[in-house]
View 1 (cartoon, rainbow, N blue to C red):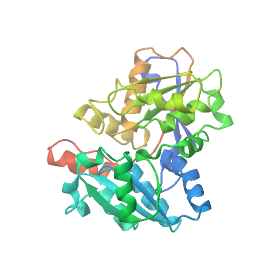
View 2 (view 1 turned 60 degrees about the vertical axis):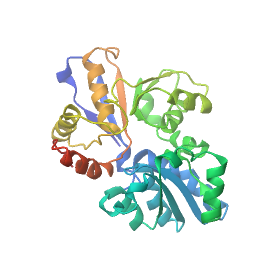
View 3 (view 1 turned 90 degrees about the vertical axis):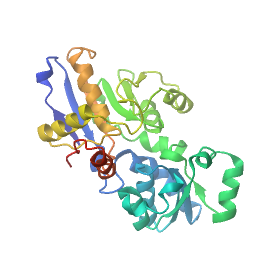
View 4 (view 1 turned 135 degrees about the vertical axis):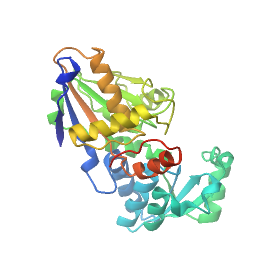
Length: 297
C-alpha cells in the first residue's frame, strides 16, 4: 500500500508517497520479511532444522528471525553482542520477545562478537550447537537481496525517486537491482559512512543510486530530541509511526532535501517504510533513563 503524504507546506512542488512495507506482517515487518522469504524457503528445502544468526540488543533482525523460526517450526539461535546482557535480557523488549519465540540466546563479549565471521569462531559455534544454517547479521545475503528485488511493483514505475534507509545494504541492493532507467534510489544510511556501496555493487551493476549519511544523527542507534520531536510530530500529522534507528532518519532526511530543493520540480518520490517499530519500546527505555522525551507509539 502506498500512502500519499501532503508536503505542500514545504514550499516545493513535489509529490511524496510512503510504501507501507511495515504492514506486511504484524511481527516480521517490512524488509525483514522480504529478506527472510527465500532464506527460510532454502532452509526448509534442505531439510535443515536450525538457523543461527547475530545481532545487538535491539536488533530487528533478531526479533524477525526468532518469529519466522517459530512460524516455520525451525530452531533458532541468536548470538548477541554484549555478555553483560546475560542476566538482564528479560528486561529488554527485543530479547524477551526473541526468547518467547523460542530462540536460544548466546551472549558473547564485544571482542568475541568482532570475530563472528572468522572460521575459528564459526567452528566453535558448530562444536557447541551442532548443525545450523548461518544467517549473517542483518540478514543480508544473495537470498535476502533476491527478496528485496520484489519490493517495487509495476505501479511504482511512476516514481522518479525511491528513498529508503540502509544499514547493511541488502535492501538497497535489492531495490537498486529492480530500478527502471528513469528511476534513482537514495539510500539514507542509519550509521556513519556509506560502505553499503560495496554491498550494492556486489549484487548489481546498476549505478542509478546514491547513499548519504548526512542524516544518521551521529551514528547507529543514536537519537536526539530533534529527531524524537520530528517522529512524534510526523505520527500526529500523518498517523504513521516511525522508528528512531531507520525510518525516522529517512523521513527527516527526505523532508529536509525537499525543503532544500534537491528534487526536481514535479518529481514523484516514494519512501519505503521498512518497519522496525518493535525497537521503539527498547529505545524508550533508554530515553527514559536519560530523562529525554519519549517516542509516541
